[in-house]
Image (cartoon, rainbow, N blue to C red; front, side):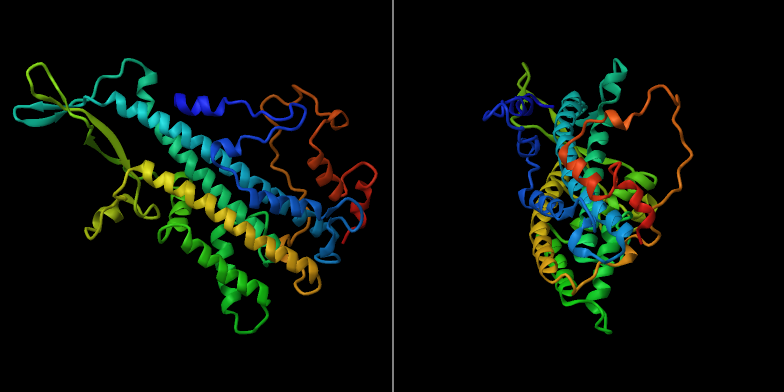
Length: 381
């Protein structure tokens, strides 16, 4: 990280030293208090005795499914915040690595015979060679984490708004598609609260960034994770102020900027075939990623306020919108991957010696997983 960021993050929290610390979110600029309130509200509605899970959902969608969906709902809300913190950390590292990589090439442009020539310095070691890879690593990390936050937010929407979609496989694109169908449903089976939320969601997306920002973020993540990566395009731009050598002539100095793909869902050949527009965004990656961080954080906060309203309404009208079994259609899975590790048995797992956070204890008890209640699972519908 840059020195200023390290100094800022190293400042003491202060306050009561015996009380829990506030955590890093605020210092990182990733704090989302309304989203945290949503998580606290859901956690408080987890009951640690029958009917288990979110108590006011009972009897829907059956005890086992209620437990599974309830716990996954809380996990999605909590993980949204974790992803935003990870994105903020990647952002700070990205800025530092981008500065270092650019500084190394500051004198790569030279005046040669009246024109300009580019001659990058030869790397002296592997650490210098990975400079650009580190920039890519953290730019990838930013987008991966933000897309993860959005997909976890999609899981929260599924649970809170009672959408007929799999919460364990939550996907923001699927959530939007599901809500659009409910909004346009001519049969009238969708509930007014779901229809209204679907309309508000589109307005929230449109009001928290330029057109297509959210779709671009998810498409870029998919390209980075699942596709062949696009050709990287960048440029050198002059550094100011201009420096002059002993001969009175200007000494060219440059900084490096990188352009991210305009349409990450298309291949290199497809975008270069299209001569009507630039294949990349006409801004520095720093501008794109910084804007994406701000849009996602603000969107998540605004989304939390809407979800809290839906949650409160549903709790006060628990019989109006039952939690659908389609959120966990097959019940608890018992299928394992078959993977046992590379050195199985190296360390023993002893749950009787486990120490954990009180929130985890509440989740386990609300899932009927303490030793006394676990046998009840065989009786759950």
